[in-house]
Length: 161
Ligand SMILES: Cc1cc2nc3c(=O)[nH]c(=O)nc-3n(C[C@H](O)[C@H](O)[C@H](O)COP(=O)(O)O)c2cc1C
Image 1 (cartoon, helix red, strand yellow):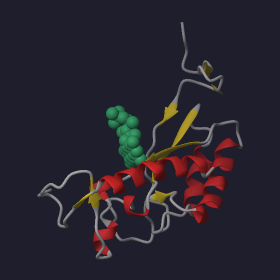
Image 2 (cartoon, helix red, strand yellow):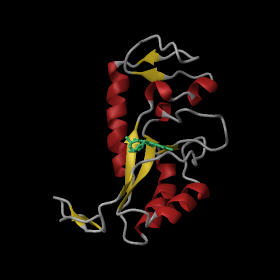
Image 3 (tube, helix red, strand yellow):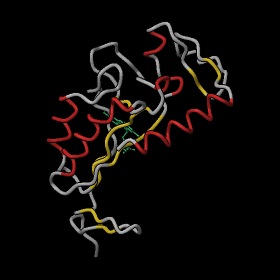
């Protein structure tokens, strides 16, 4: 019988120490331009051994793709859409790997939820034009070119490691 503390080896050969996963959970510890902060490092440093697989919270891949659900504090969602943000994520990866864990990051685009841009008086984009009655700002429909750019941004973020 398999036990929670058995190792797991995936088809690509990667092995994790046990069958426990910490799912991605936002900490709102980033800077308002998405940079990892010392708060982010401290949080994941304490949890690098909390599970066999720790998945770092949702991180937006395009400038317009976040921060989402902003409370206009000085700490926001993490973003990885430009090279200047890489050193923080490199440090985060090293922190997670220090006890043998993998460094896994959830990439996303927050779409209509990227309300920080509404607060800045900028446009917020979603795949469809729709009256989201529960939002107090308008959402602009993405063009095909916008969507292709987001697809490109996902690819670019995977290469920033
Ligand atoms: C504080 C908090 C932050 C979360 N942040 C994320 C996130 O960044 N990305 C995500 O996909 N899910 C997020 N979730 C959802 C959790 O990953 C989800 O609750 C977890 O997978 C457990 O699933 P369950 O609630 O269906 O049991 C978050 C949940 C909580 C409680």
